[in-house]
Image (cartoon, rainbow, N blue to C red; front, side):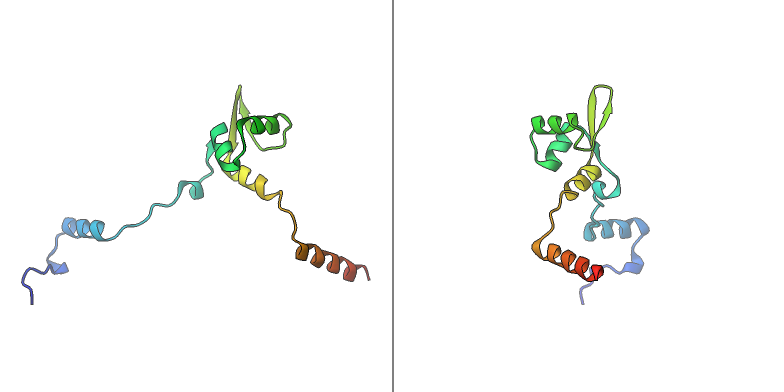
Length: 107
């Protein structure tokens, strides 16, 4: 056997911590999942993939969720993602299922 092997029982607390840090990596939780990200027009542009002009048009028509503090616009990542998902169109099979359910319910 190799005489230079470390035995866990012989390690100090600091040595054990250092050994664990070297060998175990715990991924940090994503901040977007922990809390809602608030940002300006750049955040809205990155989430929606729309141009600045389109975002400003949607805010002036109040068609996109936003906050206004003074003359600045702010957007919530969660609200923008919810807004995007609210525009989901039904598939043909979903429409057929809804129609069948309606016809069965009507009888």
